[in-house]
Image (tube, rainbow, N blue to C red; front, side):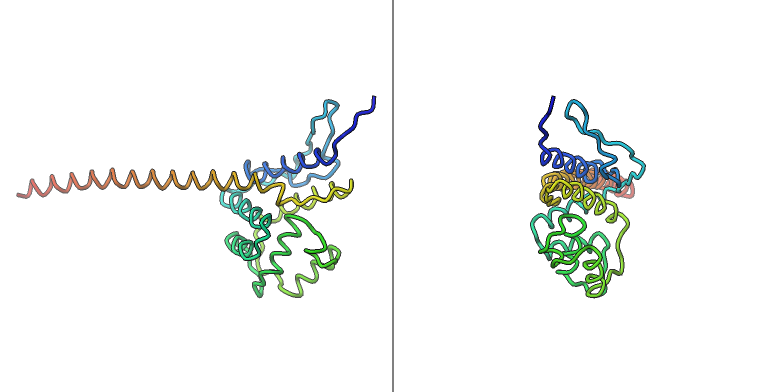
Length: 211
């Protein structure tokens, strides 16, 4: 019996699963090529061969989420600000070129991004215009995942814009992190008030003894 498959929906789900792995779990398969993706008889996706697992510390995981939101919003200056926070450095700090490079690896490689250049031409152009001085390792594998997943989509004529797909996940991660930081500050503030009160009482006791 023939079963009709919603390929666009399947590939979108596949992409969201990997976005969740990267930004929520901080542990993901860095090699999601078609040979590692199975279509199960009951319609579920099967992911195999986690031989290239990459783990991200919380700082990089949350920073990458901020990058995804900036790219989805097509905010050139915010993207550069986030990239700097993640440790990216380039010779001239050209916002537009570094934005295009971030879009290329982490979002889409449309003509608007590459100027119609192929992969090698685009990389050569970026290197000639604003060569990289420093690219943190924690940015390499997420970009690779995004690129490979888009290649899966392209094989079926599906044009993926990964940042837009991943934006809801990224925003949730940023909101949870902000709440965690806020709660941490509140706990520290409460501890400070509590210890300040204790220290004040002890100081008063010593003063009374001296009298």
